[in-house]
Length: 112
Length: 309
Image: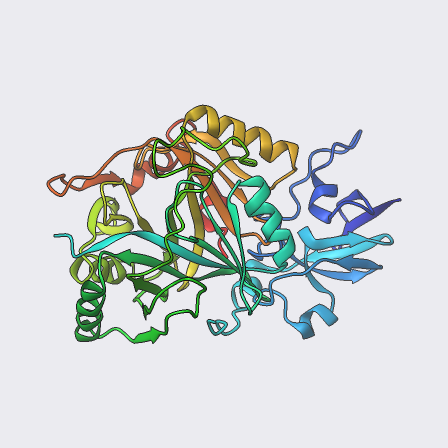
């Protein structure tokens, strides 16, 4: 299945397969669509937080994401790392500003 | 002046899925799986390393580095460095022998950049994997993936890199091998490469607003051909590539960077410079940072500078 992912600004969208995360969908070749760099691309493993977004509407699944960048509560409110989001319907998303990303510092985990 | 600190001995890395991580470090990097402990941590090593393990993976909600450990030459040196660290004002914690399987007592201390380091003198010496100590063959035949030789160094990001560099130099006898200075910014040091051995670096520090960040753990390969072969494996297994294959200006190593499944960066590299105690510090200008980091492209890369765990 392929779904449409549109940015909240209404201007840009791309297609993403259900086996692809949003960054893979964004970076896939699509006839007639310019190569998009809408979402910043970082580690692609849910660790660095640079692709932090909010999903405004639609169904999706996520793989594990660093709790430093997405708290339990934020995850419940639709915040996610795009590299770990797999669409299950058409999605509408918005980028979170880097300022908002940078303000999201949780306490360092205790060592063990 | 060297103070009995021999080499990077281990790094404990946080991963979000231990099974995925073991597949990455064992089957892709080609580290040897030496088992798990009662906490579920996974232990691995490069095949040329004589001690039991050098990489410890711990499952956690947040990736990054827990600590980096250096082996010292004796228990006496361990005690002396512990006293020196206390006198220097570090917070020092003694971790009892056996907390890491097969490792003796560890002296853990904090640093001005917020990273935790450890010293230890004893670790089970199980020998190089797959070759004998007498009349050894060149290499074992059944290595996997990139066939990484050894854990080599870490690059750490943090705020007060001058403080951490001074601690490593003054208390632990590291030598500043290379640095990057911002000539337009009052010669502020942007990066410091430090060696406790003859290598170009055993740990490196880059200035960054946030404390305690992990840029990469690096593993040594034999040849440039092996770096290109690692690049092939990165494509074959759809591993997230960061940059390379290329050469660094700093240390002149030949390198490729990629990410583990939790977004921790890895490097595999070969070659590079060496450091004798009488060598002057090599200095790069921050204005040439593009060339200093990527000697061929000579372009700064936002991801390499900013993406950390």
